Amino acid sequence: MPNPAVPANQPTPVSTSRQPARQSQPMVGTLPAPLAEKPPPQRIAVQPNANQLSSDEMELLDDPTPAPHNLTLLDVLLQQQILSEEQANQVKLEQMNSGQPVDNILISNKYINEEQLTRARAEFNNIPFIKLSETGVSPEALSELPEIVAERFLMLPFSINTQDDTLWVAMADPLDLSAIDFASQKTGKKIVPHYAMPSELKTTINERYSQSISTEVNQAVEETSQIRDLKAEQQDLSALSGEIIRQAPVAKIIETILAYAVKARASDVHIEPQENRTRIRYRIDGILSEKLILPRTVHEAVVSRIKILADLKIDEKRLPQDGRSDFTSDGQEVDLRISTLPTINGEKVVMRLLKKNVSAPTLAELGLTGIAAQRLERAVSVPRGIVLVTGPTGSGKTTTLYSVLNKINTKQVNIITLEDPVEYQIAGVNQVQTNPAAGLTFASGLRSFLRQDPNIVMVGEIRDAETAELAVQASLTGHLVFSTLHTSSAATSIPRMIDMGAVPFLLASSLELTMAQRIVRRINPRFRQEYTPPPEVMADIKKVLGPY
Image 1 (tube, rainbow, N blue to C red):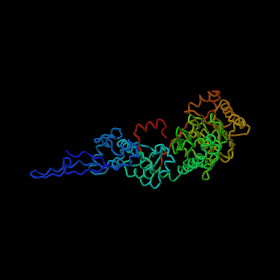
Image 2 (image 1 turned 30 degrees about the vertical axis):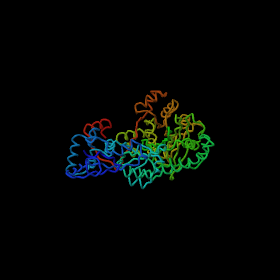
Image 3 (image 1 turned 120 degrees about the vertical axis):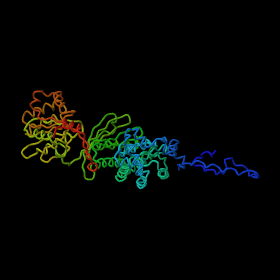
Image 4 (image 1 turned 90 degrees about the vertical axis):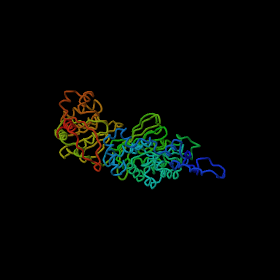
């Protein structure tokens, strides 16, 4: 029988006989011993040092294709119901004829997209998959691997565990053991590979290293850690917070976070404490995405610094607080609306960014066309009445009203607005910002506006019964009133007004138009593709939106 299989990291013994090795004896009168049977071919795997990887990771790397031998990538796609039997057969036939890899055939024929292919590879090889656009990148992890190495091997470190010295890395090819071994030697950490889409990896590597948000924050975190370590023996963190927040590193962290938000056109920044870390998320184009991870140890200093900027109470951590601040980045002035909220892991901070000196878009740029635009233009051309724009928070209601005001703003009319805050500055319009601390609210301001001989009045939001009643009265006395409501549809704005105390018959004679809107993401023109929907879908679209 053949020799038993020898582990890959052990030298293979050489034998010329099936019998165990013996002392040399005379061969007189005997036939030569039969030649040893050729041992089966053995797979030689380059294994990292056992001290660098856990037993599970060693097993995974030793057998990079743990899927059953009778299971192929096409079988995985069939199981996931991404590929049909007919398409799978076409792929097999084309592979036999052309000799191209299955991956190339699947992508070129547009049977699947890149994300589906990468997820299938991950399941086939039993390796975790990660979507970088939905995951934050730790600055400490990013600093472990130089940019040139990340670009060469198409790998991005996104998380680090200092307790067991593990570095989680997103890779286009986690089966590249030479790249894993090189990264392990370079960083001195255990490498835990994850599958990621190659195109997303290239984009993320370029963004992370070029924008240097993680690098700058990591340098500030290191400096903050050094300050904290010097005094850790004498003081606890709460006593040290007052000194840390005045140091340059913490201010640099805040500046870097906000500068990135301005550059990425983010509308909100969320600073969320978790059990072992602090997560930074940005709302970009209406979608929250995790972009940065901070050590949990600097959370209190960061929050305290933000409170100082917003003129909030630093020692008040039991109650929510609201404040305002200003920030300038690359010549762009931004108004910050800051809100803190106590959670079980600490205080969460949300900062809303409102750019100053930005012109309001036109109605056409907002996507308002066809019969909807015609009805709105007719409603705003009347001399009196109420025009209400409804929708959820952040749906662009105030922006739509700014576009309307830009359209009807002439030298012949007196326009006064009462807002919280003033988001756009319009030449020739008298804009007032509410100040509840001084007693200037929507209701009190609207009452004063009527003595300013206005033609058009815009109230940022109708929130209470007094404001609703004053808006109706102003429209009945010959003023055109614009405002917003938080309702889910245009029809529900009427019962909402009645619920706030508006008299139904007065509302019926004053309400000119109520419209609901939503904000949607636009398709990137570079990746836009034409699509002809089925006839039943076209019929449904015309039924809902009209023939225009």
